[in-house]
Image (cartoon, rainbow, N blue to C red):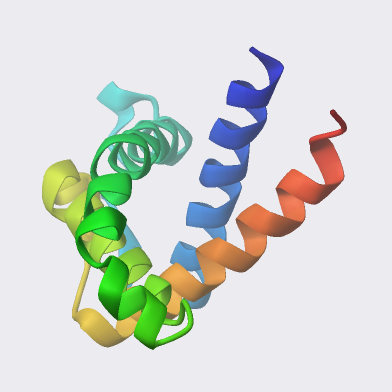
Length: 123
């Protein structure tokens, strides 16, 4: 249970870093009825976590030959596509404008998630 919570918080922090560092990745407008941007960020983090849990393994399996040929670098493209899918599923709450910003955001999310998991995941 703790590991799930750590991964969820890592996703939330990583998404916040991507929104903060990449201009073309935006969180929805501050709507008081939803509890503000923190609540929106947590909802988007939940969507992102579910996309990574359900869709990403299937995409990785289907793209296995390309992953082998590129020595795993195609994972960065898959991360960008998962971020774009999250933006599409979240609607106006989370927007990713273009593949380039999704690629950069996916790279930032990967680094921040790795760092947060290294600090907090002490199994």
